Image (cartoon, rainbow, N blue to C red; front, side):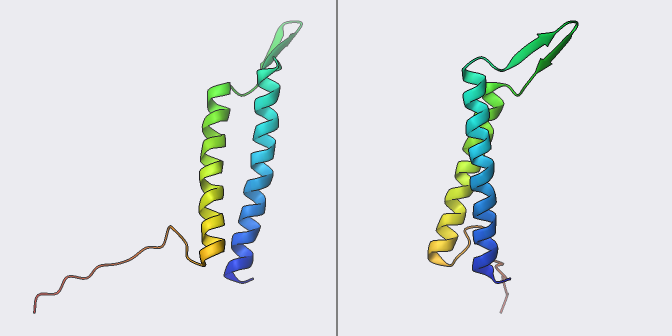
Length: 85
């Protein structure tokens, strides 16, 4: 699998996860955050944690789209070697 295919696969995964987080955020906003059945109470993710994860996924999506468009990864490491001549 080439570099572009790997980036595209990661981008597809990020898009899928982002869609799930959008649906979860919508569910929390309409009041499906927690419910109680008898003595047990179930609480889903909190709105701030969902929004933080959405922001992180959107940032990662932009990085992957940039890497796909330019062919260069933003996270490329560069080493600087100082020499005393």
